[in-house]
Length: 335
Image (cartoon, rainbow, N blue to C red; front, side, top):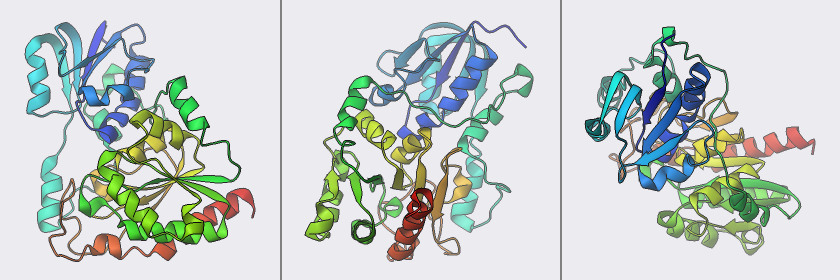
């Protein structure tokens, strides 16, 4: 194993992608426990990493790293991450091999060359040489919370009963289960279980949260805490930590919940497992429409359905989602 004294890891965005780098950080630290590990990220995502025990320094795109590194691990591998390299020198670099041609071929022709469904974490690891001793440790993602974030979440965890996190947002329409469908699932569960529901999302998700609330009966709405747009990213993470399970779209909050080992109920629309973004080493149930010929229409999602029907989401029955969640709680708590 080569002697490595300092390492720079680059992953500039976004929430889920950064959370998926945390097993890599842990394994780099295990391979070179005395090495100093720095990380470069966009400022908005710094809270995800600032309490990591594996990192010495976190640089941002507003305060770029400089100097010399024995090893650079570029887990972004695009023009932006290569721009970071202009300010430093290094002896060796590992770059994430994205194999975007497989994504494009699957989206544009439906031809699947993936062969197996590997996590992005495994693909990150495959970019590094095995003879360096960077080994899979069979552990999942990690997230490190401040006590102030946990104190915030504790206010909502005092009530008795079960707690379900509901991460209903996503940047693109084709990755969002419709708000009315989320409302139907909440309504069905509220009739069967003594449960609090936490609606979690950013300011961009507030109007969809309002739609969910508006579609609920007064009795069901009384069981919902709408925190969309009012809880910070890490406060939302702390709320996920105190949940018994999480219902979510393919979004960054899904990966945050996976870092706490939560049982996940995952809704995939235009997303497909082959892209590598299933929860990593966390228990989950997947809801999707696998035989839909127009799926996937994109590897990141679209703001409108190209076919105009959004069947990748609307063909997922609310009843099946609610029944799966209900069965989970019945078996876990012996109702």
